[in-house]
Amino acid sequence: MDFGRPIGTVVPSLDGAVLQVLAGADRGLSGRQVHGLAGVGSVAGVRLVLQRLTSTGLVHVAEAGNSLLYTLNRKHLAAQAVELLSGLRTTFVTSLRAELATWTLPPVHASLYGAAARGDGDLDSDVDVLLIRPDEVAADNDQWERQAADLLRTVVDMTGNAAQFYELDLTELTAHVTGNEPIVDSWCDESVTVYGADLTTVLSRLHTTRELLYTTSR
Image 1 (cartoon, helix red, strand yellow):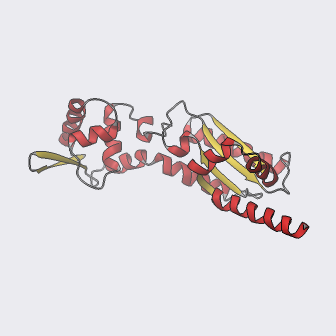
Image 2 (cartoon, rainbow, N blue to C red):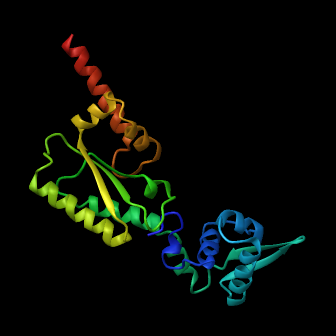
Image 3 (spheres, rainbow, N blue to C red):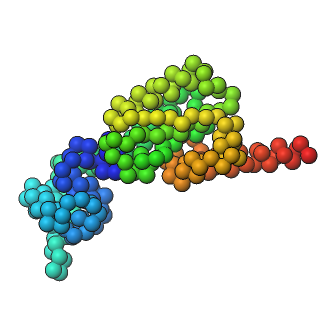
């Protein structure tokens, strides 16, 4: 899946880029504005696409002074498909949440990070998933391994992208934090939570627990 422009997974042409912009807009946009937001093609090329889509009725055009403003005609029969394709990244996150909710051994936290979380990946980008399991669940627990393997297959099947998990328990997460591992900052800055409390809350709880243990031991 093209996480930067999800509709491009199915419509890789300039048409897809234009429709992606219009599907996400809540107001009329000029051809130049559509081009700027699409980030591909030329202004002239985008205007040609807009003219063609207008002729199909999928896009509406209105005059505003000296400008022409374009909007997606959401009543068009094809508009639902456009919105669905444009929102594939959101659909993906929702699907991950639904699968994780069925786990008999749920994680403390699960999130996307990297290109899939930032929304700037393409068809060749990996899907990176952070999985934090409870301390009492060992990494070699058969049930946990089956769940993780099933989720990995689900990610690949849903997106067509390669997937990799960064899996650790709370003790290992604490070691990452105290060791100032750079990847922790990446998780905090860009992660999209798909299960459990957000990572900031998890880290805050770890900090509180360490403080309590330190105070008790004195």
